[in-house]
Length: 328
Image (cartoon, rainbow, N blue to C red; front, top):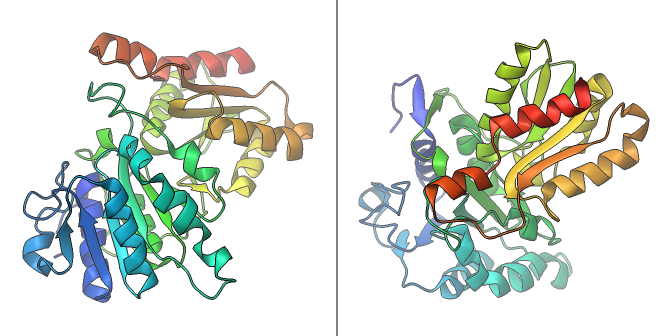
């Protein structure tokens, strides 16, 4: 049911996308741990079991390997499953089904078959959940040919990208920053699917390009407000899709600003930012007037202590400092 509201919580937008997809296509089914009566650990699937029944909203035992393996089997037999892994850290238990099976299906069947499944999973810190419930592992999956990786930053994108992911014939890892679930964002009642692989210019600027995605965009936006007081005008690019990523939009922005900062919550070492930096240093070298800067978490597990986790995570202050290093 549509809500007559000017703003919708991020988690509600995802739930709405799932409901609308299930209404339009009875092949869409949901699988996960505690997603039925309990509505999922973050309440995203609340009400869907009552609306669609136990044949389409299926609770699973605590076995991510069985969960994603079953989703793959369902996808190969005509369904469009959406599997929820409670925390992204637990994707480690489903790596064979994701990396060796789902990602390879289209290739190994000579293009005669596909695996149209979506794996939804939350990543990131902010809840002081410790090293085994706070990781950002999206770079793992972006490295695997055959997988699409998506990470929205607001309610409209969460809805539109998930609708597109469900209809895509390829397996999609749909990453949700857990600190966003309760946040409200503007939402259009006529919101449509958003093409995968298309970035969004979240803020127009002329002095420096900040490329980011997911929950990290809010650090970039806060930094942009602060930097504007020093007459530094930031352009913010929200990638939305991490694989394939929209290098054309990033290059267009770099051509205008001539400076590039890449921000993500994940560990900086070997991350998404490293790939973007390498690519822009290749195809955009002549546009660069300063070194490329990357901002990410340090190379250590996520701390449990609130004070340590706050220091560990990127922040608006760290973005501001990096921008000033290459602009002033």
